[in-house]
Image 1: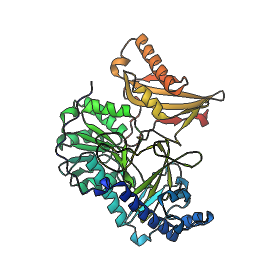
Image 2 (image 1 turned 135 degrees about the vertical axis):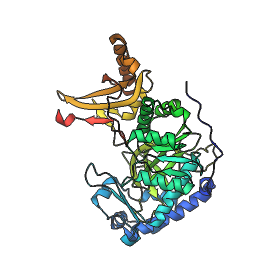
Image 3 (image 1 turned 180 degrees about the horizontal axis):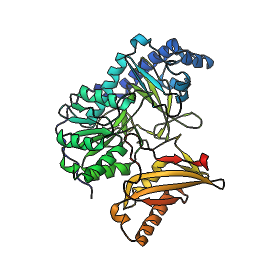
Image 4 (image 1 turned 180 degrees about the vertical axis):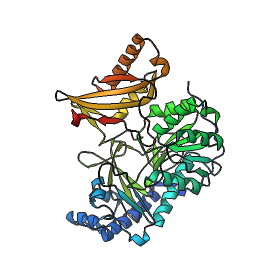
Length: 444
């Protein structure tokens, strides 16, 4: 049975008028900012000007919001191809911050901020935390990674801007995380959802019951996670678990966040213009239809991103939210167009596997997908941690659990995969984004 969410004290709301702007006024603001950012790209970013000229476009052709569809897309490879500073629209003397991706697949992606950009980033993170019910009396444990990753400093500046107490603990050193959570009377935590699950697990080993701590909210992001995982987190801890969305190429965390109704993430449309496009054709789709999220920064000076293809699959919700905000919402990101696996002709997303596993009693939310190739055919193995009680059962009971998991996955995916049950703590834990897939097909 799920634990009842912990009660929240009165919420402090910063000035957040943009959240409640009447829609016509919001669209007017978006158009004004869109025209300015397109003109900035034309004047200051050679790649943008070259692509617009190839389409016979000038900034004057953008006279309405639907005209944005005339503009070319920006993709991740553009940032790598122009590494490090080729997409900057501000001179280096105006740049106050640089962040970068880890660069594990080649050149890192470099992103830049003017002081005004940092101020905007802080403001959307303040609004994000306020939407989640946090306020200036909270103690926020920030377990996102600091350094070149945008998560740590994004949440840090937002927490301080809110007036909360921020603990810049970063990721890792799990036992210390739990000690700080307990001793500093932490009321909110920011981390990846997979790392928080690891914290829950380790806390239990240390005889620390998170349900007895003041912790009442978690703001989780930086990786896809399912509704089932949210329910698991809330049931184990009694906190409210909120989904936050962002990406370094746009600004970092703070592009969109859930309100307490937890029915989609409100996009801060006054700064980020959202579109949904067909992943194959690039055609713009209407609100409500699922496709790839495309974002345009409306107020980023150092490095404006125009029609950036995120590869994240979602849909936009235009219907009013009971919270009263006029900002459109997007559905939870469950998958990316570029993390799709094709196994024997079937499209497979890791999130589908996770959803199937969380429906089976006796499993833990820790799994890994191993891809190999045998006799020219792709093979998929799903290693699943099961509870200590399940693993100590008789062989027959384990076989039944294995079959039950295999059936659940087959029901979701439409193909039969090999399921391997492993003991608790067998699968390596991640302090950042969880690595769910190990692809060994090139070695087979």
